[in-house]
Length: 182
Image (cartoon, rainbow, N blue to C red; front, side, top):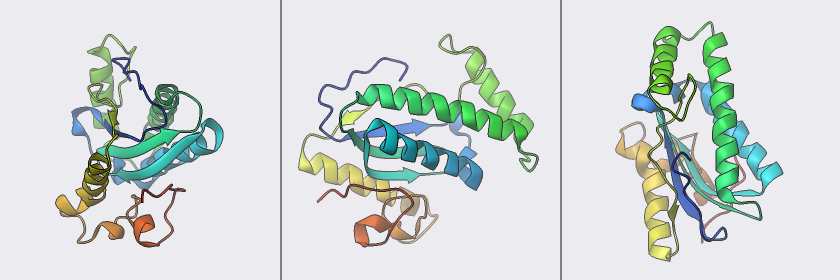
């Protein structure tokens, strides 16, 4: 997190969003979505990340997360760094990526324009975790997160979006282990 946001209470769920620079629709490819999911699973199993809700859209990711013990900002930093490097390799080596040259050009252009990077930037850097310390805040963000694909017109019901925890909240098993918010 480029602005070094500190998370005060690690036990309280936080709403976090990551947007691809220039709102590039990167996550239209299953390969790239799976990289995000694998990274989240790794952080759950190895770093103590608790995922309460998640949704991968075409150009951004929403999460409601917590942590068991490690600082959340460290987990997020590591996850963002890993996924950026992994996605860079996947984009570069994907012979089926019809937008490869354009995507690489845009991400390199964003990286060179930002002093925090050497040569590549995947995510916008002006996002920060929002502490969800009240039930109303939590339920509002949960509803927003799950309804995002509906609002965008991709589906009619939140549980129809495969890359989300909406199905978990109605008894379906999703792609990630989710700690349901009651």
